[in-house]
Length: 356
Image 1 (cartoon, one colour):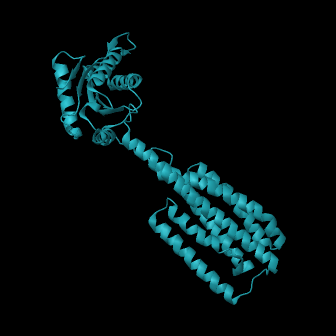
Image 2 (cartoon, helix red, strand yellow):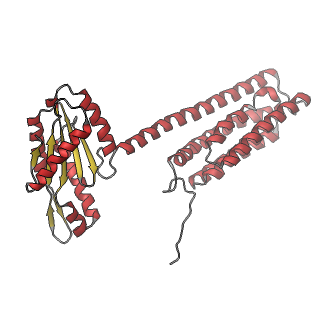
Image 3 (cartoon, one colour):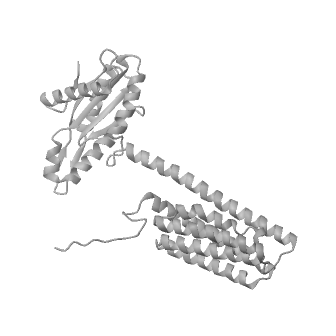
C-alpha cells in the first residue's frame, strides 16, 4: 500500500505552531493598520502634488487588501513578504522625492523587528534585513548629493515629519504590545496544558506533586492534612469489553462526580491511567476518612450505559494516609496511601482503607 503524505503550510492546521497562529493574527492587524494609514495619507500626498507618490500610495493600499486576502487564505509568509517589499518601496520612493528630512526612512527601521518576527526561513530574514540596511545607506548618501524631486515648504515638511514619527511610534508600539500580550497569553496556555490532564481537565501528576509538596511543607502538624489515593475497580474490563472510548468516558464521569464531593481548596489530580489522588489540607484524619467515604459512594453511583442496553456500574478502591511524625516528604505519604489502596483491593474492593 502506498503511503500518502499530505503537506500543508496551514498555520491554523495540526502542523501549525502557536507562533504561526500568533503571527497570522499579528499580520491581519498589521495589514489593516497599514491600509488605514495609506488611506489617510492619500489626501496628504495629493496636497503635496506629486502624482508618483500618490500613485504608489494608492497601489500600497490595494496591496494591503491583497495581503489581507492572502493572509485569510493562510499564505501568511507570502503576504508578509509582499507587505515588507511594498512598504520599503514606498518609503524609499518618498525619501527620493521629498528628501531625507521628512523621516520616511523611519519605516525601513520599523520593518527590521517585523522581518525577524516573520515566519520566514532564517536566510531570507537576514537577506531582507541586509537589504533594508543597504537601502537606508544608499538613500542617505543619495540625498546628500541630490536635491528632492518635490521640495516642501517648511510647514509642510514639518507636518510630514510629525506624521511619519507618529505612524512609526504607533506601529512599533502596537507590535511590542501585541507580542508581549500574546506571548504572556501563550505562556499561560502552555503552563495550563503542562499542569492539566488533557482528558479529565483536572491536575496531572506533575502539577499535583509540586503543589501537594508545597502544602505539605506548610502544614504545622501531622493531623492537619491527608492524602487519598484511589483507582477504579476492574477498569481493564471496561477497555477490553467496550473499548478505550468507554474507558475515557468513565474517567471523565468519575472526575466530574468527585468534583461535587471535594472542596474548592482540595487538590485533585489524575495520577495516571485510572488512578487519582486528592490532597486534603487543613483536614484531620477523621475528616479525611469521611471525605474518602463520600467519594466512594459518589463513584459507586456512576454507571456507564451502552447502546446495546448493557450497563457497567463503577466503583473504586481507596487508600488514605496522613503524615507520620511530622514527615514532610510527599513520596512517603504517597507510598503509604498506595499501600492502603492495595489493601482495600485485597479486602474486596469498593472500600476505604486508612494507613495506620
